Length: 388
Image (tube, rainbow, N blue to C red; front, side, top):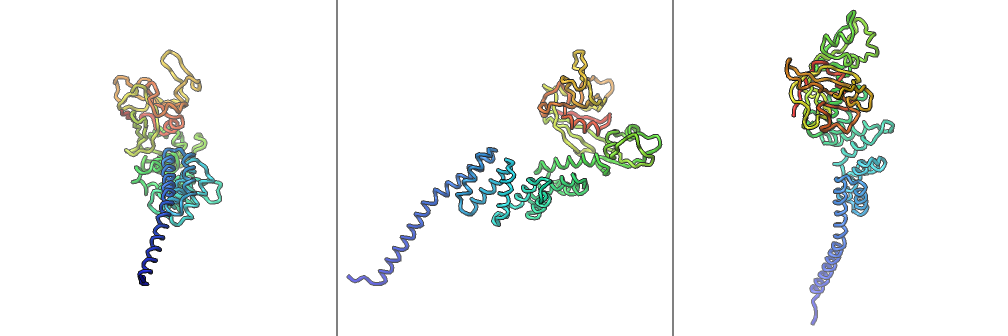
């Protein structure tokens, strides 16, 4: 029987189509396990990274990066490798990988993070300063998380350079995002303290200028205007308080301070006009022994001795003295009230492990550097509110 030509052509076309389909099926069956394997490597690497098992994470991610074809899988692998090396503080590898992210145009959405991370990895000695990277992070994706974080870092750099107004403008612009960025809260507290101890005038706490008169001393001015001599000296950069000049203009902080203690959070806040200026981690009394209520700062002592209650006096500097470098006694505000604060105060400690927990006999303890800062700021009579 004679086969018609169109029929032969149809048969040949069918054979070609079947062959082509077979090739695609074969390729799919070959590639699918490989792709599944690469996805598994990426998934495992991410999971290890999130568990902070960085050595194991970067091995999986490196294998994924080598095996993955160009595309999303490879991009995700290089992104998490960059994060991993940054977390491990492997500076050179982190810089190399973040630069790969920047060179990849398909990863434009991660460029702000890459520039921000490169800024954090820079030291003061680097040829390209961190400031340049932070500005690029901001420019690459304005308003993004990493652009905001870059702005916070710029504000911190401005504080180091004493450009306090510039830092203030940045942090105030971001103020409504404090819940999103713990870094922002910390930077704001740092700025508050830097402003307080600088000649810059502040509205909260209120400050004013004072002209030195004949016979004035820092102690006398402090008593008259309700501040401390230490704050006067530091905020006016006075090297020798015995050498005040008549007519010299001094910044004086006249705003009232308040301390608020949360026993449950083991946190002490420094406030002025209901604004939190700074926050300190503290230790409080074992078994809830720290009293609750309203009190005031009484006697203030530099390098205090300790009276443990057994008749002994443990001098400052002795290994058994638990009071650290400063003592601020608490007094009941109402006269003739039961002495709920007898022997209770705010003091320092050399033992950092006692901070953040119930660790004292009832006192409020801070790290020495923190209690020294507070000691210089708050005058006697400052209100202290202690809450559960």
